[in-house]
Structures are given as structure tokens and as C-alpha cells.
Image 1 (tube, one colour):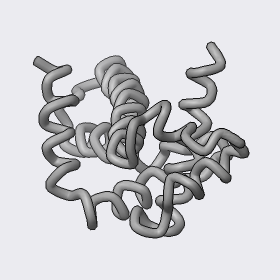
Image 2 (cartoon, one colour):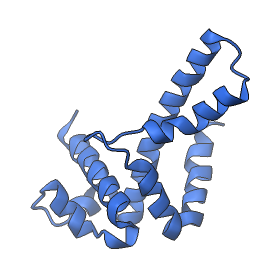
Image 3 (cartoon, helix red, strand yellow):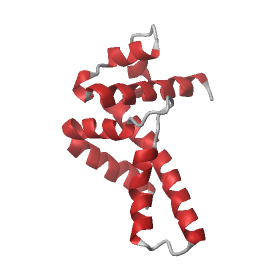
Image 4 (spheres, one colour):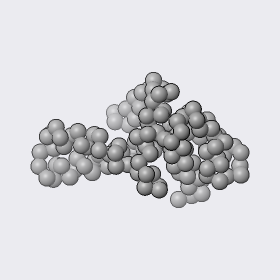
Amino acid sequence: MPRSETTRATIIEAAEKLIAADGIEGVSLRRIRMAVGSGNTTVVAYHFGSKDGLIKAIVLDRHRRLERYRTELLQHADASGPSTDIHVLLRAMWWPYFELRNAEGYHTYAAFLASVSKSYGHWLDQLLEHEIGRAHV
């Protein structure tokens, strides 16, 4: 992975973890920069533009991971029998949120979403509809 992509991934991981623990309002870009150990005071802004840009990057990154896992669950269900069973479909829809782990093995994404939805709920809905909904068209 190129250095720039490694830095972006490191920032995403650190920001998700901090926001999950302390809430969106309790985490500054400076604190995220310090968590990744960067001496560059604009490293987060350079890669994401703003806190909104960083949140968007986290959501889109995790959505890709969640969708891959959902696809695996549905393919396994198809191979095992009828994938129209409501339990199978609900498991494919929700289980990935509980299984998704960060680089350290912690389940921080659900807590991150809960924090973000308090302050960014409407914005998050629009992001999901615009960016993610567009990918399914």
C-alpha cells in the first residue's frame, strides 16, 4: 500500500476509535493527529479536508467492508439453502455491524455511528443515500 494510503488508513482507524470512545464533539483534528503520531499539523486536513470529510471517508470505507461481508453471508446462505429466509436476511443485514473490528480487534464502528448520528444524523442519511445509494444503481 502506498505511503499516502497507509497514512489515510491509520487516520481513519484512529479517528473511528476516538470518536467511538469520546463522541464526535469530544475529538478534534489535533487530537487525531496526535493519536497517529504525526508531526504535520495539517495531516488530517491534507488527506480529508475537514472533519466532515474524515467522517465521510470512515463511513464509505466501512460501508465497503460491510458490503463485502454481507455478500459473503448471502452467498453462503444461497449455497446452504433458501436465502429468502427472514432470519438469514436479517443476519446478513445487521450481523456485519457487530462483527466489524478495527485494526486492534475492537468493535468501534457501531459506537462511532451512534456518536456521529447524534450530531450528523441528517447529513449521514444524505451521505448514505447519495454516495452509497448511487453505487447500487
